[in-house]
Amino acid sequence: MKTVDQCDFKDKKALIRVDFNVPLDKDFNITDDKRMRAALPTITKILNDGGSVILMSHLGRPKGGPEDKYSLKHILGDLSRMLDLEVKFADDCIGADAAEKAKDLEPGQVLLLENLRFYKEEEKGDKEFAGKLAKLGDVYVNDAFGTAHRAHASTSIIAEFFPTEKYFGYLMAEELKNAEKINNNADKPFTAIMGGAKVSDKILLIESLLDKVDNLIIGGGMAYTFAKAQGGEIGTSLLEADRMELCLELLEKAKAKGVNILLPVDTVIADKFDNEAQKKNVDSGQIPADWMGLDIGPKSVDLFTDVIKNSKTLLWNGPMGVFEMANFEQGTRAIAEAVVAATKENDAFSLIGGGDSAAAIAKFGLEDEVSYVSTGGGALLEYMEGKELPGVKAIND
Image (tube, rainbow, N blue to C red):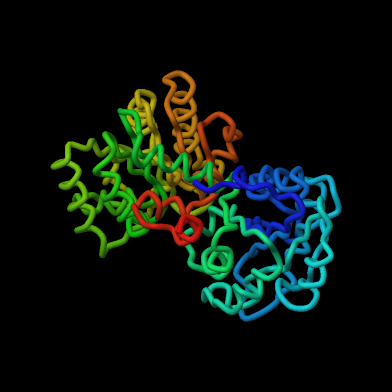
């Protein structure tokens, strides 16, 4: 793997694709800076070598051009504090201002470019746009695992302009190493915990995992489609009616492969989607007509916890319920604590698969108690499905 450790950046301008797509509140304060902190080791290595750094990222989903709320200028102060230096800012990612500021950059200095997605050419993977970005630096570094599954101009096309001077940053290398450990070198028993709203989002991943795991735990909103498919009553719970047949097929495949699939045996239900709603516990498949399932119940927690604590490898992707609401977070919290217990007491390797799982583990203050928390939900899913990620292929080619 070609990482930044294989390059001496002295007097070189490193053009780094980072993932600074961080959440901001209405006053433009960063509410979770994990992705920014994750890029610091790569930036620091290059600066310590005597190089300079040009950072490019996207933020949000701007539509058809610049929008103030998606400007990367809002994160400039935080980035400067993290690096303990004054980060320079170009009010465009290409053009005269960006070119001039990149040209004038001295060793030890950092320049942040404006949001790449202010240009539609970024997401289209436009080669001419990638070429304009490439002219700003001497070396290309990709440290944005969260966008590695996109064939965008700055994540894959740009690498063509750096045939020999292209590298993975430390974050990318670490993400790939941990994903590879799960994919091909998992110690047994291997348990995958799948949650989230939709079966359709996880079909390919589940099918891929059936060839690898010993146990597959299914919770969250997707569990209600399985319950309905098996003849249960789910009230107004989440349902993908067109996926019920698929759920039954997945259960049959798991059985044929000797994989132990665990579905919730009870569920916490509410009379409306509200933290203050009336709630009670019922057996799975027995939800009254006007009620909805919002969390797994205590019997399910016990069942799942027992399997998790006896596992040696754990992959968790997706919450067990609506953990954002305090009254419906218990199932997700219990699973998080079980994963932590297995990591500590059973010396298990635990990988938390980005997205809502990462948000949940952070909410419960357990980020540092598991083996690794991925910064890329979609990218990790596609990697685990066996797909080649464009951002990875571009550096390896």
